[in-house]
Amino acid sequence: MSLKAIEMQIALPRTFDAAKQAEHLNGNHQLTQSAASLQLEKELRKKRHTVQESKQKGLVALRKEKE
Image 1 (cartoon, rainbow, N blue to C red):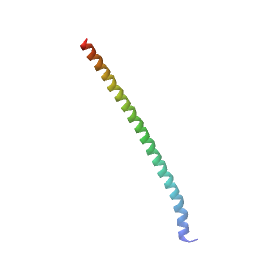
Image 2: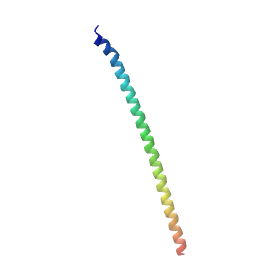
Image 3: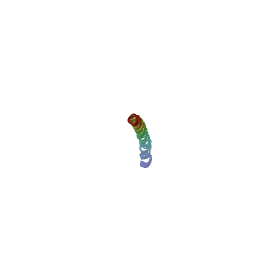
Image 4: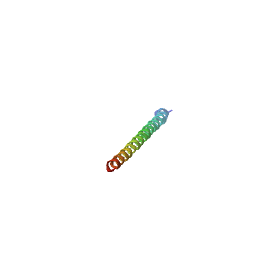
């Protein structure tokens, strides 16, 4: 058996392991990004809701002042 054949027996399994690890890490980053996106969307909804409530309260206050 040549030295090159032995090197390939060692190199190929390591390549597959490295690919699996890289895929796992990319999957984790995608999950983290998705979670961050959901959190941002929740915060934006809350801020929009707060602004709408403030507008409504302001309109009610203006109506009361006119009366």
